[in-house]
Image (cartoon, rainbow, N blue to C red; front, side):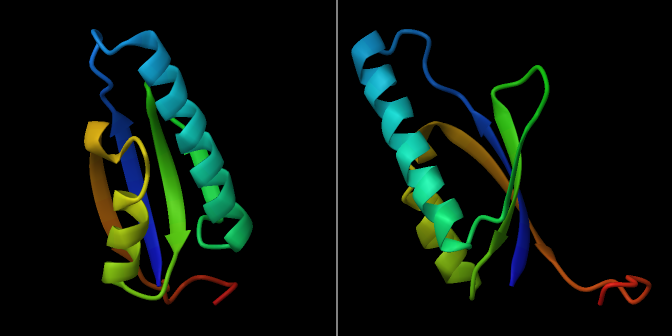
Length: 93
């Protein structure tokens, strides 16, 4: 199943810089691992914001929830999920 996911990151301004650096490093490693697995085929930065728009390809709602909640930055994110379906006018469908 495909999902369009927007993630807006809201790290507290008073977070210890070392804790923040570790968190961001772990987030990048986790995100790259998931991308290499094929479950996160598209990842785009939202210009001018600490946010991204992504496409996930996972087997279920529960699988997506497990993946997203495993992100190290998950506690600091506002996430919007939109399930996607094939459009009848898509020439590639």
